Image 1 (cartoon, one colour):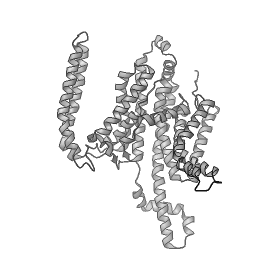
Image 2 (image 1 turned 120 degrees about the vertical axis):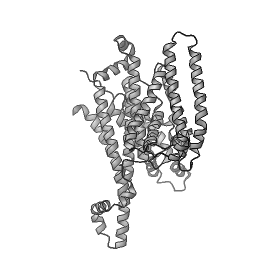
Image 3 (image 1 turned 180 degrees about the horizontal axis):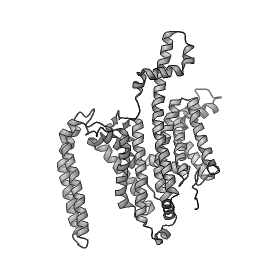
Image 4 (image 1 turned 135 degrees about the vertical axis):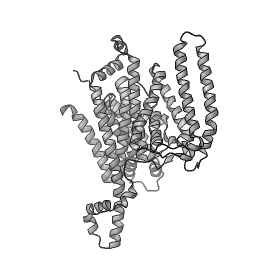
Length: 456
């Protein structure tokens, strides 16, 4: 217990702050913040696996997040049968063409290792394949996107349970990470960062512009979720009775039947929102706890010690017979899979998929700030960083508005200074996060909960 006193203290403060939001703002807002904190924690676990365990810089986090969100659409959405009839089979055929191209290229690489004409043959296969794909896919895509574009205009998904899409989201991200890792992990750290950022931009650009896949910037709304809908709860007698019994003291003070009924209806509406968010909280908390257990066991296992040895000194680890490239690829794939899982969780929580909201140049660095603030290489620290930075990101504006009103009470309401400061309150989040980061880096340069090396 003594070894965990800093962790207990830090998390106690964080929980206390979320409870304050519930008391002074609303419990619905507090639960919304908590759910996004938990999603952010999953993302930071993925980033910490790559950077904290192996020292790999991955600035493509939002690309893997977007793939996780795409998985929710492709798995849980019902298939659009008209779109499949219009051009679905042609796109499946294009998939087979791509598979054949990959097989041919692998055969050519293995059989013509010493041939000078190898690159020309491979180039011919690639160009021919791309032209064939273009010839088949163009009319099919045009036909699919013309099927009721206001509502569909895409192939839809498989209509499977949404929780299954969380696993597929992780697999999608892991698959892309494997391809990227094979190509880019041999690069120097700064080049690797640039390459992963650009690949994320490419992935998001494809998702945004290929309407047949996920409606592009038209967005997909009304996605399935593993929790009841508010309107269903409001129409369920058991839930109404539960709310009525819970607030019986308050309702008994109202004498008018109509006023009592109106008050009960409003309480049911508020309670339904809280109930749904509590369901998501339970799911997300379960995922975070499971990942924390697994990553903690991995961190202090022989494999974890090997990864830290590679991170600290690749030359020495290589001299001891460790396969640096293989281990880097494994950790890159694992971390990206966790980030893809977080992307699927986020889209499920929102109930909609909006490719335009994935901006790597902005949000990637927010995730990195979370890891750095919490403590690189410490799983508890990475999770705490997700909580702290997201809480500040959301609550910076209300905190700034409260402080502005507090320190400008002596000024008239029409004062230009006061009006300007109040209008600028939303932008104070950058100032507050910047100041917080500077303070932490000054007094806790290794993060709030720095990495602890346990010697065996």
